[in-house]
Length: 308
Image (cartoon, rainbow, N blue to C red; front, side, top):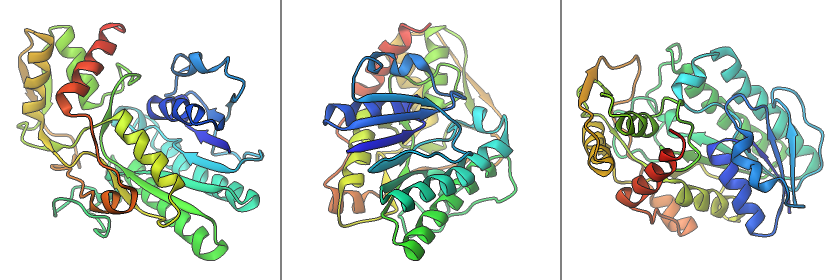
């Protein structure tokens, strides 16, 4: 297949491009390089089945493809809050443009959504049928509500135009090619530990996140895209949540760092828990994470050692 990957030079996008090429597909990687990096895809540039196009998905794209993975949108708070209007436009205008492309070409469309559609959940674990608890006017809303709107658009295109869609709700994912300055908790903790700096924990450290290693997440995305039975949404994440304080201590131990914990006030609308119910992914996709946190952290730390 000729597959378009938007956000293809980003952390997950670049790994997805690599995996699709490995399965024999041709890949058109589209990125505006707001958070993506040429370094992430430099090893793919010589592959005759790989093509790179610098483009912003808030503008229409006229190409011929068989499939679309829409990963275009800054995913870390430090990046998506820097230009919230553009973040929202990327999710909404981007989805409109790419769904229009899917409608015209007959391509299958996968929307990379997020666990943030659940907001600060009042139920745990989070199942796909849960509508969430989202602040529509908070500092995180540009991302949370933008992704919710993209899901709405996908299902409306499906119902109105029979567009072939898939929606993946991605929970926290980590691994090599994360940017050292992206502000995400795993990259923050690792960089601070390697530098023997205080590790900043927001709140009392009891809030939880579930961390999925990138290889498992990419496998889930591909399985969902090629599955013929389900449109989604489908949770993709690790159903073993960990408190932030424990994660920090694990990273300090692995890195043999002298860092101490520095507790700061919790940011606005920061969710207190993330715990995916992946029953649907297990039953319909035969998918669940295989890489345990200790193994994934060791590999990620080794990567970050080459960047600091």
